Length: 239
Image: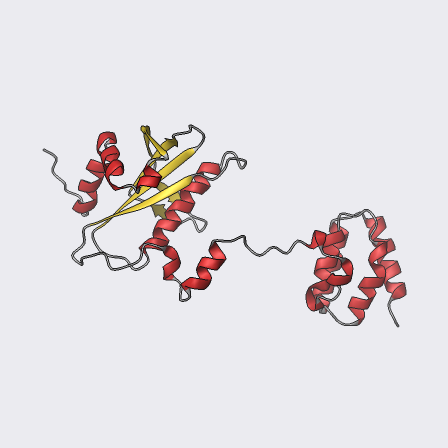
């Protein structure tokens, strides 16, 4: 009989059961929602490392992580099983962070791989019953309705490659940035001189921004072209 000497006996007992393949399979067959369970080939259960490091290099750890193949055999599904003996108001967000970490690790060695489904599950046996907090991370926002709209749709895209120049020059203090970065890969920027003069005359950028802009043009082109460009730009500027 195993004696648990850890300071977290709840976790130790939970892991001793749920890291066992047959036990984990029973757990998933019983507790996974039917539509998700039907996607999983539980014969392919594989225990994975559940420790991650996030972008700030802080340890990020989930209790148990299993991978399974899909029934179609094309891709993977991961099941994160987190154990909690106390309620946590931000548990849903924590599970989402675990899920994102699993996705990131999955695609690290091949950026072309599609993201895997990650199913986060919480096993709870705290003193407060029933579990008091939503496990939908979107409910943690002050405005869940707007959060659902934002995170269930494509994110806003500013694609200057398809915006007409005549429209870009109306974009006030971001016009210079957008115009130059749209055309920076062109071999000849001389065609932008007239528009740049108008923007510079209307003071659409401060001195440090203009300096940064000119340095950018120099760094991304060749010196001869840059000198010609600056000479023509200076000539066109009102005295």
